[in-house]
Image (cartoon, rainbow, N blue to C red; front, top):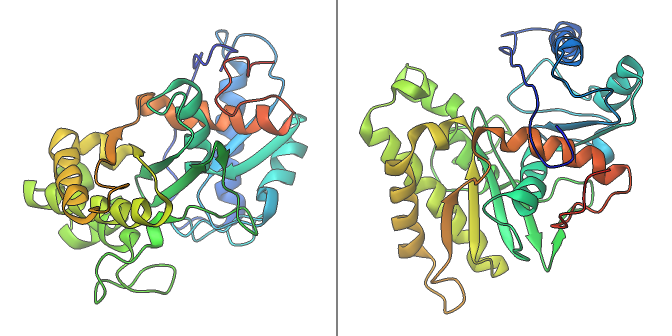
Length: 281
C-alpha cells in the first residue's frame, strides 16, 4: 500500500485446512514473497503490518486465532520479522480495520465507533474518545464473543451462543452444510439480526453512535444483511444516546483489512494514523 492508502498489489490464498503451524506459515510467507516480487509493488517495502484473528498476547507476539487451530501461541510477529527483514507489527484484524476506516473509510473523522469484521470469524475494534481501545493484553473489542443466543451453539472459545458461533462464516457453513455464499435468504436475515443484536449491546454499553462492518460474509450478503442488522439494532438500542446508532458497510470495501494492516505497521513505526491524513511515511 502506498502513502495515499491505495492498495498497489494484493494476492490471496486459501488457509490450508487442518494444517500444522509450519505449513500455515509457509503459505503466508510464500504469499508475501509473491507480492514483494510483483513489478507494481511500488518499490521497496518499509514496514510489515499484520491484521490477525485473536486472541493474542500483547503486540501480537503470540497468536491463537480461534478459526486457525494450527496456530496456538504461534510467534507470528517474530517469525515474520525474521523472514521479511522488515520492522513488523501485529494486531487484531478488526482493530486494524478500525484504524483504516477512520483514516480513509466510513468512520473518517469519527471519535467514537465500533468496527467489525464478519467473515470466517467475527472480530471487533473500538475507538472511544478518539483512541483505539487496547485492553490488558491488546484484545479489547471481541464482539464475536458477545452472547446473542443464551442457549445457542457451542463456540470455539468454549462458551455457548456467542455471535461467532451463530453468525460467522464457519458457523453458517456448519448450520447449513453449505458455504456462506450459498446461504438461503432466511440465514442471511438471521445473521444480520444477530449482528445488530450484538451491536446494540455494545452501543448501549459504550455510547457509540456508529458501527462499521466489513468481512466477506457481511459484504457478500449485502443490503438484506445490513437492513436486518439495522432493524434489530433499532429495536434493541432504545436509550436516548443509542437510539440513533447506525450500522453501515465498511467504506473501504474488500480492501479495508489490507489498509488496516498497513496502518498497524505505520502506527508501530511512530506515524500518527489515528484519523490523521498525514499518516503516510
